[in-house]
Image 1 (cartoon, rainbow, N blue to C red):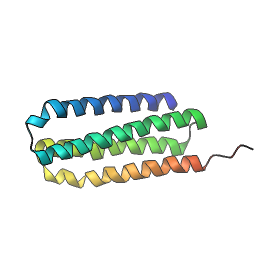
Image 2: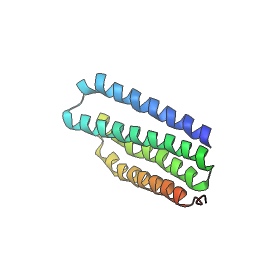
Image 3: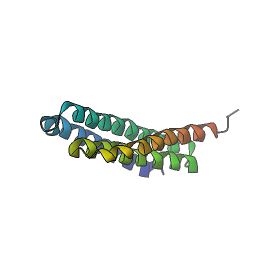
Image 4: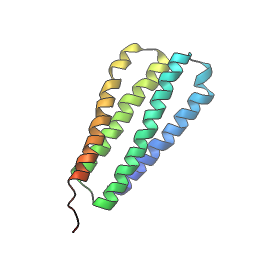
Length: 127
């Protein structure tokens, strides 16, 4: 589990940096300030939650793999796709209906962090 999620987290970080650079150098000149702010919000949340995937992978190495950690990782990844992905497409196309998808990604983020906390709470104290 640890290796898989370090790979996924690293790829998500790579994409966040690439998408952010694309926005700063190419997209910025082609969309208005409001759309750029939406795009930048997508990049910010993408990057934060990609780091979250790396944290979960490291936790799995420290605590051992668990169903709760797997769900935490899956939910953060799904959140990146739904939340950030919808904001990227919305800012580039102006298709407003995509804004309805964004909160689903936010719910995935919240649930993912909850599962990480739940995994940590399930640890037995060492005496």
